[in-house]
Length: 357
Image (cartoon, rainbow, N blue to C red; front, side, top):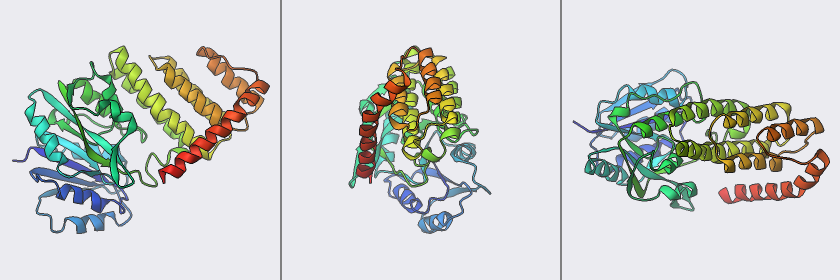
């Protein structure tokens, strides 16, 4: 009997699914169960998937959903089928690097108290896999726990991890699209005995056009609503102040502030609905422990990225910040102070987009 189950979910991934499945076929070990969930794809993904595995000597559990229901539902359906001692996830637009699954299994089996193995996630930079800069502080070989090492919250997605089957009963949040994986991972981290960090890049992440990350600018208001729901749930799960503050850094500083930046790069005009949304988010931050750095990062993103501030909207924004102890100048002085910074900010963002291509 195999000990590992790999869960692959896909939706309109025709550009990547062949590479994803090839990365599985090329692993040294093939002693695993494979569950593939088609989340209602309407492109050529299923045809390409069938072609990629037609000569693959493996018993595969196929699940075809009639319509697209999102990552959370697709993963939850697959979790119901897990019958092995441990499992892992792979999104169809990503891949496992050669022999990395073997290395993760070996790490898991060499440590009796281990419930989760975290491999590094890499991004292709000019043909070479590089660890995400924000993950550098967890790029090491070490046994950790969430209580002692809240920095593992940097790796808050399901990819690049091997989970004990004790977590197969957990579920992803199906009522959100943005950050739907946070509560699953935080619950697993909280319940785990030991967590093994690995310094090697195990999982290759590909950011594709139309991905959740890429759609941030066009779905700002619903994504902010999702972020508020998820943030509140996670804060209720975390017990210690250091865990809550680190999650604030991860969620507020590295996710929500970039969501705001992405929105303002395409839709820079400040509107009442925008101010209302960020006000609700800032008020939610006030209800829990939060990172001061994260708060200032959000303020900076809004003031340096937004344009066409009216006096009424600025006064409303000024009152919001006063309630959290951040003083802002009068309207005329604000416009005079932010214009030079806004130009520099815009230039930096355009440069980032050029370098990213």
